Amino acid sequence: MDQLTGMRVFAAIVDKNGFAPAAEALGMSKTMVSKHLAAIEDRLGVRLLHRTTRKVGLTEIGTEYLRRCQDILQLVEEANGHLLESGQHPRGLLRVNAPVSFSELHLASCIGDYRRLHPDVQLDLVVNDRVIDLIEEGFDIAVRIGRLKDSSLVARRLAPAHIVLAASPAYLEARGVPERPDDLVGHDCLLYAYAAERDEWRFESEGRSCTVRVHGPISSNNGGILMQAAIDGQGIVALPTFIAGKALRDGRLVEILARYKPQDRAIYAVFPANRHLSPKVRSFVDFLVTRFGGRPYWEP
Image (cartoon, rainbow, N blue to C red):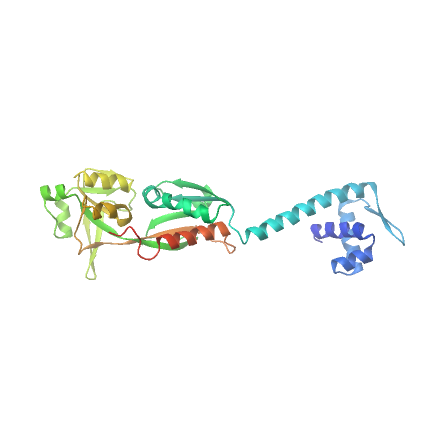
């Protein structure tokens, strides 16, 4: 029989001073109450109660066991109450992993707004551009950008990640403006080190796709560094608009090959599959969808 139920039955017998009143209080038969108590005593190999026709009394060891049962039952009630409350209210530590550039440019500025809505959530935001194992490294959520591989994780789309090719006005004046993707072969291209095929850029135009092998003097695992190199006239860069949008608006970068779109990606929140998604995870994902969904503010 269930040991926790047995503890509740034992405590009720003592509290109600009898098997019959305990059975009535617990909504079970007197026979079942007796069976639960007998199961505990058999398991422990001791007698917990002195029984008479008129009342029950605790043995010495029964007194000690009752105290421990009451402590355990109180902890269980507190835990259940906490879970019920947590089921309606986001709280606790939320560990988030996200890419460096996206975090610096967009995620950092919205953390305060999220915590004003949910002050009982403590955020631990770890930024890097490598793909981590959420479960192994103990993260609740990761923000990922690109085309996701099949996995056991749940992914919720937050926003598009449009990719543009761009260069500085000075670079284009000195080296000329490419008119077709094949023209990139003669140009300095700035490469993202973590791309699956960093020296191959794929384009789509009017339903057709093509791939161009590119090369250049600089590669980096950080999009912000590549953007600054492009602004400084070091070459042509392929960047998502959430990084390059401001530089395109203010003219530090100029979009090229607009007719030939690099394959777009998307920004996702990913989290382990769980039938009972915690309120802190759900609230943070919903917040990100609200903040970044639709046409993002960073689009040029």
